Length: 260
Image 1 (cartoon, rainbow, N blue to C red):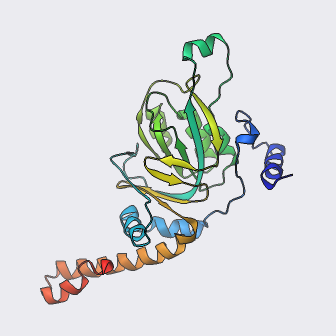
Image 2: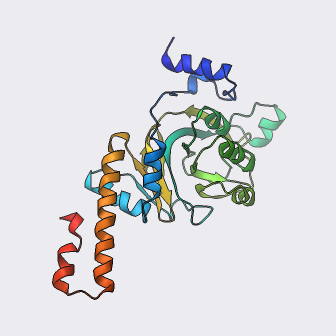
């Protein structure tokens, strides 16, 4: 028995398997999570994604998504957590025919919520399609009660007012009243997905705020945190000199020093 199959069976016994996604589509369950202490350290950064994006550039990693592509439903929210992933595809039948044929509902963000760990961030790939909802208020309620940090959706959501009332952070392409029922099918849980133009693997580290979203490979989480903290301290020093109207001779050595 594979490790994924064993963990799946254990989760099933614990009541953590929702059961709408065929088990062979659940690709991974045992990837490491970033510690709560590191998540909190990232959340302490003043300009979270700005600082991380600069560090990703230094390491040659394409990992930043502009807020204009995936706006946050609740301004002011910021999250940091390990990625769990879901890939959806459109149904071939029309929704009407699916209803007539009494097809099963083939979408399930809840499947991801129940197999996730507190602090995780659900990353959903529907190819940017905004016609149907990948999740709504009830699904976000499950995510919140399971302790997820939030969700990143390359597609649309619905029940926007309910999601805001829940205070559950979501970044997405937009809202729609249309249900995903009979309109989409969950093809893979915890496999690689594409969010806008960035590949996200389960176990990647996600940070998001009002400026956008960043995806950090696991092996760079601690180095990037250290560099972001150092850069932030240098920026604070430069701000003090600017406010005090220090001579340019003192300011210029600090100007864009991180890029040298």
